[in-house]
Image (cartoon, rainbow, N blue to C red; front, side, top):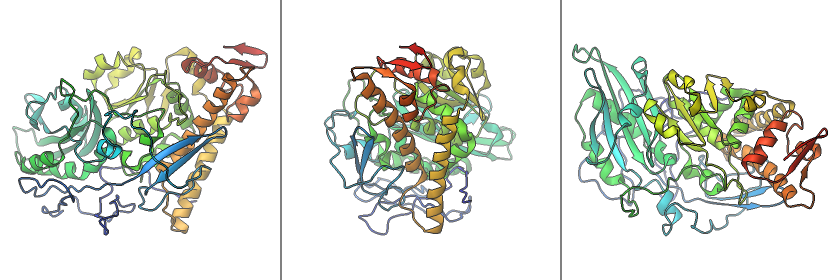
Length: 509
C-alpha cells in the first residue's frame, strides 16, 4: 500500500528558480534536507521584470514566480467539463482526474465577476503587487503582544498582534498563522528563541507577517517570513530587508475613497476560475490534502455536508495552528460548485483562518464561515458557531443537525472511492513517476464533481413538470434516501429549491 507523509510542518519545501525563464517556478515535491540555522545569509532571488529595491535585502531568502494559466468550465447535463491550460504545481500539464476530461484551453471569459473590474486576471491574481503591509510583532514581558514595526507606518493594525502570536504559542518553537484582518488576509511566521536574559524571562518571541487582499498567494512568502523572523530574533531592529521587500511588493489597489479594498477576493462558490487556478493555492499541496484526509477519515463526508449547508464551522486545536489553518482551507474546498447560478442566494463560505476573542464581535455578524482557534473559551460561546471540531471530534449543539453527524452507507462508499482514487494517484506517482497531477487537484475535483452532480439533478427536477425528488433520484446523486433525508431537507431550504421530497411515503417541501 502506497503511503504519503501527512506532515505539513513549517516550510517543508523550498522554491527552486526555473531553469527556463519561460517556465514557471514551482515548489519542489521532494525538497532536499536543509539545516535550520546555517542557511547562507546572502540567499536571495531578484524577480525578473520587477522594480529593483533601493536597498540590498541581504538574508531575505525570498523568490517569486508566475504561472500563466487559465481555466474555464463548461456545465452539461451529465456533469462539468473543466478546461485547463498551463501547468499544475508539478510543472507538467494536468491530466484526467476523477472522470473529468482535461482538454485544450478556452478563454477565461468576462471579467465582470472579478473583484476589480477593468483589471485583467493576471493583474488581479498574480502574486505581484499584492502586499498591503509588512510588520513585526513581539512579545513584551510587561506590555504583552505589541506591533514593534510596520510599513506603511499609518496602516491600522489593531488586533494583528494577537493574531500573529496565537494564544499558547509560548509552548512551541515555531509556527505559521493565516488570519483575516478586515478586508485583508494575513500570514505570519512565529518563532520562539531561548535567551540568557532576565528581562525577557529567558525567551524571545517574535512574529513577522504580511497582509494582502487575497489569502491564496501568501504561501509564496513563507520562506522569506521564516528567514526574517529568525533575523529579528538574533538581531532585533534589522528592518532593511523588510523595507526592500515591501517596496518591491506593495499592492497597487484601485481607488475606493477610503483607500481600502471594497471586495474581498475570497472563495467563490459559483466560479471555478479562482478556486482551481494554480496561482490560487494557499500552500504547496504536499502534505496538505493528504493530512486532512488521513486526519478526519470518513468524517470528511460529515464536514462536506456542513460546508455545503453553509454552516458556521469552528475548529479548536492547541498550537501549533499552521496545520489547522490548512484544515480551514480544505473545509472550504469541500463546498465548491461550478454550475452557473448555484449558490448565488446563499451566504459565502468565508475562510477566517485563525481567530481569537477579539474576533467575537465580527463572528456574531457572520452567517457562514470556517475558522480555527487555540482558545477553549469559544466552546462555551455556542451562539457563534453551528459545528465545533475538537481534534477529530465533530459535534453540534443544534438538534436538527444531529442526524448529519452519522456516517451512513453512502458516505462510506464515497469515501472509499476518494481513497481509491488517491491511492491510484500515489501509486502512479511512485511507480510510474507520473507527476502530472497532485492530491489537491484530485481532492477539489472529487468534491466539485459530487456537488455538481447533486445540484444538476436538483436543478433538472426543479425545472420539470413534476418537481418531486424520489428515492431513485437520491441514490443517483450518491446519497442515502434514509440517512441523508435531513441533509436534503436542509439543502433544499438553504438553496431555495422548490422541490417536494418523497421518501417512504414521507414528504416535505
